[in-house]
Amino acid sequence: MRLAALHASINRGLADAEAGRTVPAEEAFDRLEAKYQAMARPAE
Image 1 (tube, helix red, strand yellow):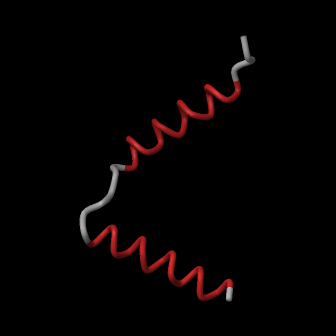
Image 2 (spheres, helix red, strand yellow; image 1 turned 180 degrees about the vertical axis):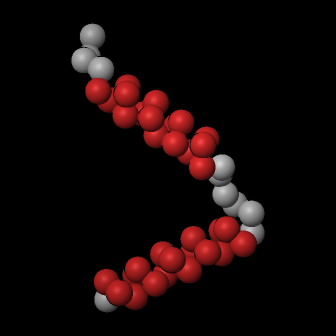
């Protein structure tokens, strides 16, 4: 069952890429960096 779910996820990702539903890597990494920096800040 888990292998089938993995294959389905990969196929969805490939379909997204083929359809142009992608984000440039630099943009994705910038968003992730901002997200985790915000999580690392102490709560006020």
